[in-house]
Image (cartoon, rainbow, N blue to C red):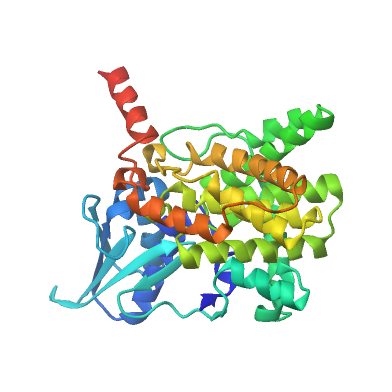
Amino acid sequence: MMESIKEIYKIGSGPSSSHTMGPKKAAEMFIKRQPEAAKYKVTLYGSLAATGKGHLTDYAIEQVFKKKNFPLSVEWKPNEFLPRHSNALTFYAYDGEDKEIDRWTAYSVGGGTVVDDFTKEETVSIYELTTLEDILKWCEVNGKQLWEYVEEVEGPEIWKYLGKVWKTMKASVSKGLDEEGVLPGSLKLARKAASYYTKAKNFSGKMERRSMIFAYALAVSEQNASGGTIVTAPTCGASGVLPAVLKFVETYYGASDKKILRALATAGLIGNLVKYNASISGAEVGCQGEVGTACAMASAAATQLFGGTIYQVEYSAEMGLEHHLGLTCDPIAGLVQIPCIERNAFAAARALNHNTYVLLSDGRHRITFDEVVKAMKQTGHDLPNIYKETSTGGLAIFHQARDIMKNS
């Protein structure tokens, strides 16, 4: 059974749900398990080790132990991948004589979720229907919308949680539009959201609107890259897509908070289905699982907000994921900046295009959402590890080679 959509929308600090939020949570869990040890060690494997510095993985873990004044050493093994997941880390606890008293291996599987080899982290599995086809049949039989199915399963209390999510999303947009300067990290990448926003206000018509969707997405993505507070949707690295689209529809089409929250429910359901049936982890399936899923969520939300049928919503979500199939995760210097930030902006624009395209149709199409989720999972499985958040292939390696040539 699928978990609550609360697991898709987690409020926390960037820059990465899998490389920052997840390892931080794992560290907290291990301290609860071994609070009396004399010292500790953590070994980072695979993608966590390969891009951990750029994602602040070690910093996030160290801060947890530092609060307790517990000594911690960090070991890096970027070329060693554990079988279950590429985002693996093993914690060790030692007594006063340096004797190992406990070890625990955890996996940060995306969206801030942590599992181990034995028991999954305690979450509420509540959705019996785990394909969009079955959910659409339920909606058809009961004369309901997709957001109503979410309410049926989650209960009316979900609206309070989604209200908090929407409030946080809007705050991240506003703060990001007001910030200037350079993002942290070796790239010295300048923020763009504030200048894009200023320029957008000087335009009119279609140019203003298209520029504004870019500004909104950049604002949240830059907040994430700087370690600011954001909402995973479904991950930190893809957190700018959905808020940008929702803010855009609120600003230019006057969508009410009630309608926005219903769109969040539908988008959360889409993200949940991808997470359950495939993956939302860039380290497992590449960026198609992160930005691709975010685009599917935003596409579905936009189509619902513009009055689309449940079948048009399904079509829009399908296109959001289909047109990101094969997208690699190759962040330069291991930072959630290039190409991540721009990808959020263009995925938001794509989501609005999908909405327009779908509303011109009758909702009929050949490839179903469930099929494209399966295709994404298989594609992710077939991608070499160099294209799955290790910064050892694609843009990351070519940029590194260019810098080496400059300095030689």
